[in-house]
Amino acid sequence: MIKPNDRVIRATVAGVSLIALVVIGYPKVDEGFRLRDENRELRELEQEFTDTQQRSERLQRIENALEKQKRELIGQNVTPTKIGSVRDEVIRIVRDHAGSLRSLEIQDGQRRAWAEQDDDPRNRDIYELGAESEFELHSHALTLSVTGKFDNVLSMVESLTDHHWLMSLETMDLKPYGGTGDDVILEVNLTLYGLELAPEPIEETFT
Image (cartoon, rainbow, N blue to C red; front, side):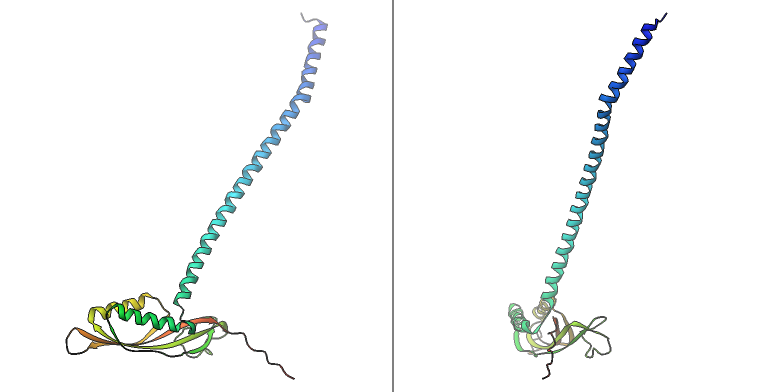
């Protein structure tokens, strides 16, 4: 039989235990929630950092690819300032393939505005194409005549095309030369192209 005093004692112990849980246990529970929230925030920050790093790496790859394309396009462009180096390179190619240079001529060239859309360097008139862009097109006619062994001349043509200059072939004539049966003469007419930023227009002043 439970005595009244025992009930009082048990009730007192239960009350004290409850108070202990509230006073001592609640801060621990609150600390657990706080640690859980901090852990979640840390994971979110780590994920955000990873995503940012991946985006940065992708942007760097894109930038590198664009820079490579830019260098390639600059190398392919034949602008007035590069005519001298192009001439020297053509002469070197002829000599490297044991050819004999008969004539090489590169005209000073023409220039016209470059259209914003759907332009073609072979077009002579931009007015059919619409609005002008900020670039202008330079075109230079190149005439080349060389002689040499048949295989050497073919290798010479391959070397010229390997430079990937912006150009269009107008005419090419290959025929026997010298009556030996192995020597040929190559005559080529092509047009070299290059794009440059158009010069700023000069503002007229009135007095």
